[in-house]
Image 1: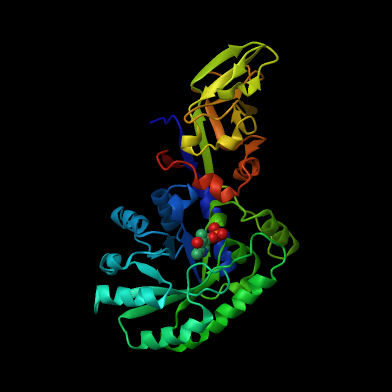
Image 2 (image 1 turned 30 degrees about the horizontal axis):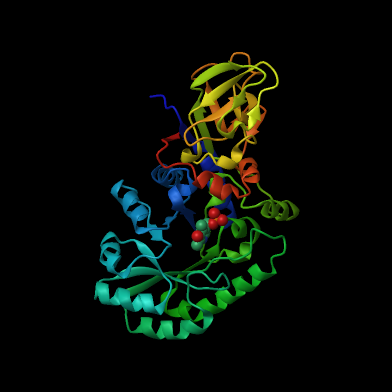
Amino acid sequence: MNHLTWVELNREAYRFNMEHFRKLAGNNRKIMAIIKSNAYGHGLYETALLAQECGNADMLGVYSLQEAKHLYGKGIKLPIFIMGYVMAEEFNDIARHDFSICISSLDQLKAVAETIGTKTLKIHLKFDTGLRRLGFLPEETQELLAWLSEHENFRVEGIFSHFANIEDTVSHDFAKEQRDTFEKMCAPFMKKYNPLRHIACSAAGLLFPDTYFEMIRSGISMYGMWPSKETLITSLKSNMAGELKPVLSWKTRIAQVKDVKPGDTVGYGRSHAITRPGRIAIIPVGYNDGYCRKYSNSAKVIVRGIEAPVIGRICMNMSMIDVSHIKDASREDEVILIGSCGNSSVTADFLAGISDTINYEVTTRISPFIPRVIV
Ligand SMILES: *Cc1c(COP(=O)(O)O)cnc(C)c1O
């Protein structure tokens, strides 16, 4: 079946990125494929399938219980780790599904213990080493350890933390401090639990082997995107330079082509004026789909291998492009919103530049209603 608007996931690109991480991690460490937020817009289930299929992922990381249950219901077999906060009353459900879950405070732990009674639970303790988001502070770990020693049904499968400033900078002193704090905070737990320690995200995975511990959690780079320009620069200067291949393409089709003449204006607010006789095409994608309104009069797409500028304002469900220079452009022609064809390409980074955000947000915002197709 042909789709009107769809997202393509390139299996070979995913496999390539995953193999790159397996080479970095070696065979003795685990890799957690981070697929929260609809796999950064790539499609939760489809990406879980790819991760499972390629054989290099040991675990899947999601944010919510809903995401975890969706994957479980679809028959995904890889172990699932829930990184976000889940209400204490939901923990019987978690124990039943055998999901691994983040625990970030003693307060939460006590409420969970009350809910699950003597059932066993696989937990990953979240340590706050500097981000000041979820997690135990260094001064809280002693009490935590004491409490856990009296509650044997809580199995400490992992301990993890998250970097605060590893993407936005080429100076990594704070990240190094966090890494060392993490190691110190974990030390008293090692003998009894032998937990999987994990603190490395994509940027750390791409740059600093001494952050790997027993597992790497990688999101953005699995999708073939660099965590930031700074990460790319640091990587190129190091002996760890590697290539990543973008997994996602976003495509739609022309709904109508029409001639326009000088004096015409295009779209809401009449923000684009036609100065020469030409042709425009209307495409059925707008900000509802995650095609950001900031792309108005700024973004570009690819039609028949040729770049075409977005003209006028992005509407809720439609946008207009200038195809005056693409002679044969016709109705139902494929239009590439993100992706490449021949020498033309539109990257998530390019769109992020226009909308003053990061590539993470550009793909994450692609509507979950749009079909994801593995090619
Ligand atoms: C999102 C997230 C990651 C993945 O980060 P990337 O930069 O995409 O690799 C890892 N750990 C936690 C806790 C996260 O929230």
